[in-house]
Image (cartoon, rainbow, N blue to C red; front, side, top):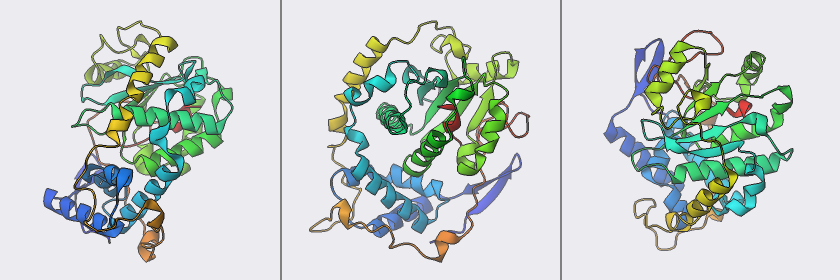
Length: 335
């Protein structure tokens, strides 16, 4: 169902306002639409998870329910929570993606990406490693936080590192199966030839995703101020304007990830009593139909105007002016 929401305008953007009571009611409507769940599916479908899917679909219950069902089916088939370090270690050797040992001032985990260090031609392998990194970043989020930050370092980047195929697949996985997990992506020192490419891939990115991506430059005083506002500079890597000169060490990182892997089973076996509707015989994921909620509403135009956030002051690739932090992805920069 679609929901009438009040809207307010801030900095030229429309922002939807919805009460906590109404949010709770919509979450419960999604639960009824999903039906009873058990096992990992019930753990995944926490109130927070349902809320993220609702926000990604502008609080449209049927569309959020359909998205959630598709994600549950994907997780059942892909089994992202079963990926372990040994499965993807070869992809990680160069430090092309890793979880930083620091967080931002909002408590968000940080994934550092260096596309010039790409060491694989396998789209399947690259996406599997991305999924592992996403799952690990989520595993390490504090209870009060649900989003992460991507820092993309373009040092050494050239056209050979661009892959439309991987960009498209990355965008699909992030947008469809990890909704509202990305808080901000900063493309740091991207070469001028990359900005037109990023504009070119805009059609494959949802507006909420595209608007989270910001360009920053080491010689821009405003970018320096923003990085200082976002991070403790003593912990931030020097590549992004921080004071930490520590270089990526694959051996030390491997040990960190192996320790994190040990936490995964307990995360997916914890009790979650509020995530399913009572039923004597809960069905498995195989019984969840993906087409039960498809109707004319699926073809309705959805208002995807980004909610204005804190003023990052980082350059928008389209307008070349300072913009507000919105919502987005840096998938085009990763490969």
